[in-house]
Image (cartoon, rainbow, N blue to C red; front, side, top):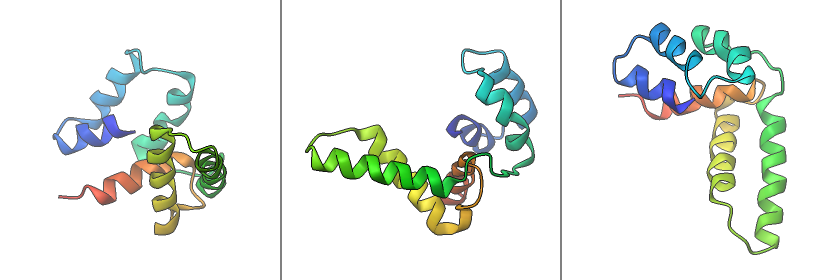
Amino acid sequence: MRNLLFADQSGLDREKVLDMISFSAMNTALFQAKKEMYRKEEFPSAFMLELMAKDLGLIKAEVDRLETTLPLTEITNTAYRSAKENGKAKFDMAAVYLELKDKNKK
Protein backbone atom coordinates (compact mmCIF):
# COMPACT_ATOMS: atom_id res chain seq x y z
CA MET A 1 0.00 0.00 0.00
CA ARG A 2 2.42 2.56 -1.25
CA ASN A 3 -0.09 5.40 -0.84
CA LEU A 4 -0.29 4.80 2.89
CA LEU A 5 3.49 4.60 3.15
CA PHE A 6 3.80 7.88 1.24
CA ALA A 7 1.18 9.47 3.52
CA ASP A 8 2.98 8.27 6.66
CA GLN A 9 6.31 9.63 5.43
CA SER A 10 4.64 12.93 4.55
CA GLY A 11 3.35 13.28 8.11
CA LEU A 12 -0.31 12.89 7.20
CA ASP A 13 -2.75 11.49 9.74
CA ARG A 14 -3.09 7.76 9.04
CA GLU A 15 -6.77 7.62 10.07
CA LYS A 16 -7.67 10.48 7.77
CA VAL A 17 -5.81 8.87 4.89
CA LEU A 18 -7.56 5.53 5.45
CA ASP A 19 -10.90 7.36 5.52
CA MET A 20 -10.01 9.31 2.39
CA ILE A 21 -9.15 6.07 0.55
CA SER A 22 -12.49 4.64 1.69
CA PHE A 23 -14.26 7.45 -0.19
CA SER A 24 -12.08 7.37 -3.29
CA ALA A 25 -11.85 5.29 -6.44
CA MET A 26 -9.26 3.15 -4.61
CA ASN A 27 -11.95 1.87 -2.27
CA THR A 28 -12.56 -1.79 -3.02
CA ALA A 29 -13.89 -4.77 -1.13
CA LEU A 30 -10.27 -5.93 -0.78
CA PHE A 31 -9.21 -2.58 0.69
CA GLN A 32 -12.08 -2.69 3.17
CA ALA A 33 -11.14 -6.25 4.15
CA LYS A 34 -7.52 -5.21 4.72
CA LYS A 35 -8.11 -1.72 6.15
CA GLU A 36 -7.94 -2.83 9.77
CA MET A 37 -4.68 -4.68 9.06
CA TYR A 38 -3.13 -1.46 7.79
CA ARG A 39 -4.53 0.46 10.72
CA LYS A 40 -2.92 -1.92 13.25
CA GLU A 41 0.03 -3.01 11.10
CA GLU A 42 -0.87 -6.62 11.87
CA PHE A 43 -1.03 -8.96 8.91
CA PRO A 44 -2.38 -12.39 9.87
CA SER A 45 -2.35 -14.74 6.92
CA ALA A 46 -5.33 -14.96 4.67
CA PHE A 47 -2.99 -16.08 1.90
CA MET A 48 0.62 -16.29 3.02
CA LEU A 49 3.12 -14.09 1.29
CA GLU A 50 5.42 -17.09 0.74
CA LEU A 51 2.73 -18.74 -1.41
CA MET A 52 2.20 -15.59 -3.43
CA ALA A 53 5.99 -15.26 -3.84
CA LYS A 54 6.13 -18.85 -5.12
CA ASP A 55 3.38 -18.13 -7.65
CA LEU A 56 5.08 -14.93 -8.81
CA GLY A 57 8.34 -16.85 -9.18
CA LEU A 58 6.58 -19.33 -11.47
CA ILE A 59 5.14 -16.48 -13.53
CA LYS A 60 8.57 -14.83 -13.72
CA ALA A 61 10.13 -18.09 -14.92
CA GLU A 62 7.52 -18.41 -17.66
CA VAL A 63 7.94 -14.78 -18.70
CA ASP A 64 11.69 -15.38 -18.96
CA ARG A 65 11.14 -18.60 -20.92
CA LEU A 66 8.90 -16.76 -23.37
CA GLU A 67 11.47 -13.97 -23.62
CA THR A 68 8.83 -11.34 -22.96
CA THR A 69 8.65 -8.38 -20.60
CA LEU A 70 6.13 -7.76 -17.86
CA PRO A 71 7.67 -4.97 -15.75
CA LEU A 72 4.98 -4.91 -13.05
CA THR A 73 5.36 -8.65 -12.54
CA GLU A 74 9.12 -8.17 -12.20
CA ILE A 75 8.73 -5.38 -9.65
CA THR A 76 6.09 -7.30 -7.69
CA ASN A 77 8.17 -10.47 -7.72
CA THR A 78 11.16 -8.53 -6.36
CA ALA A 79 9.09 -6.93 -3.59
CA TYR A 80 7.48 -10.21 -2.49
CA ARG A 81 10.79 -12.08 -2.62
CA SER A 82 12.43 -9.37 -0.50
CA ALA A 83 9.62 -9.46 2.08
CA LYS A 84 9.88 -13.24 2.24
CA GLU A 85 13.66 -13.12 2.71
CA ASN A 86 13.24 -10.55 5.50
CA GLY A 87 11.00 -12.67 7.71
CA LYS A 88 7.55 -11.79 6.42
CA ALA A 89 6.84 -15.07 4.60
CA LYS A 90 4.09 -16.23 6.96
CA PHE A 91 2.25 -12.90 6.94
CA ASP A 92 -0.57 -11.93 4.64
CA MET A 93 0.56 -10.64 1.26
CA ALA A 94 -0.33 -7.13 2.49
CA ALA A 95 2.84 -7.30 4.62
CA VAL A 96 4.71 -6.08 1.54
CA TYR A 97 3.71 -2.70 2.98
CA LEU A 98 5.92 -3.47 6.01
CA GLU A 99 8.78 -4.42 3.72
CA LEU A 100 8.49 -1.14 1.83
CA LYS A 101 8.25 0.72 5.11
CA ASP A 102 11.44 -0.97 6.37
CA LYS A 103 13.26 -0.10 3.15
CA ASN A 104 12.16 3.53 3.29
CA LYS A 105 12.98 4.36 6.90
CA LYS A 106 14.41 7.81 7.27
